[in-house]
Image (cartoon, rainbow, N blue to C red):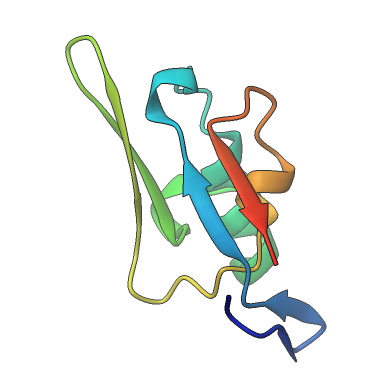
Amino acid sequence: MRGQRRKGGIVEGYQLKVAPELCTGCLRCELACSETYEGVFSPSKARIRVLVGSSTWEIRFEEDCTGCGACADNCLYGAISRSP
């Protein structure tokens, strides 16, 4: 279990769990991440990537992901969840 810490008012340190079979490709996670860290809704600026396959989705976290959980908080389908 990773410890939580604050950086600029953002909680860091959650363990994020992924269930790609539940992903619909809505990109709410990418939008939430980019808004949290960059102040804009821009998937290209997110620290998480949803990769579209022919019949499956892949969810990847970039190296600069802090584990804050903004993506999990905004996933309506349970594809991303967090635990302290």
